[in-house]
Length: 96
Image (cartoon, rainbow, N blue to C red; front, side, top):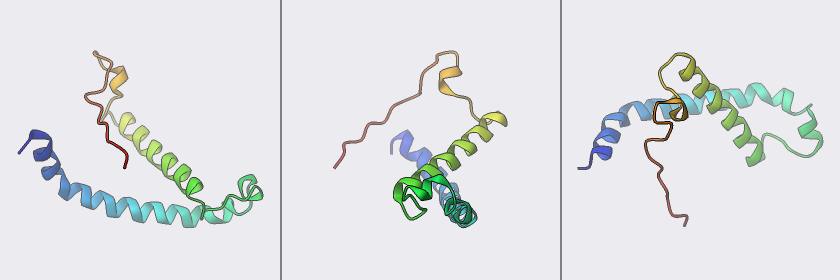
């Protein structure tokens, strides 16, 4: 088994917990945002929480805030701010 696969195997139990927790928190945030989203400028232009683009925007905002939190807690550091200033790897995936 390759090292990356070994790491993923170890992390899977935590990833499963994170998936369910993230889904619950994201869905709850959509419920909380609904009243505001129905009244804002975006709704006047036809964008609602049912639009995939809007949900993606909310997800990216959600994720960026978690990312920022991990930086603030010094759990992770931006690869571009490390001594080598590069990412460990870039994984390219062929689109189907």
